[in-house]
Length: 63
Image 1 (tube, one colour):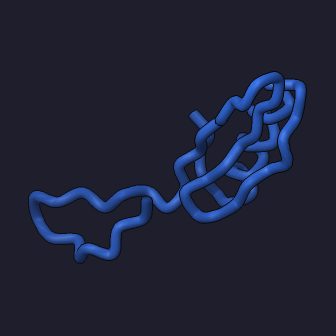
Image 2: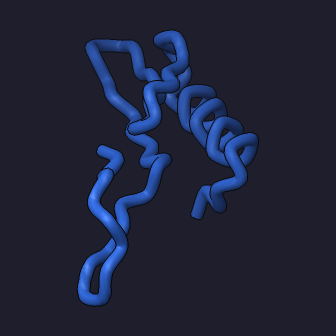
């Protein structure tokens, strides 16, 4: 989750975008800590690509 803590020496600010791929039965969906989510897909690869596309559109390196 996103942290509202001030950036001071010795602290690390959490990233605004953290991607997660969740599986429920035969479906998978991508979601991000910013609140974005993709619809459930049978193709796990498609769910991962949609998540990577979201990160790229947000200016985040997906690696």
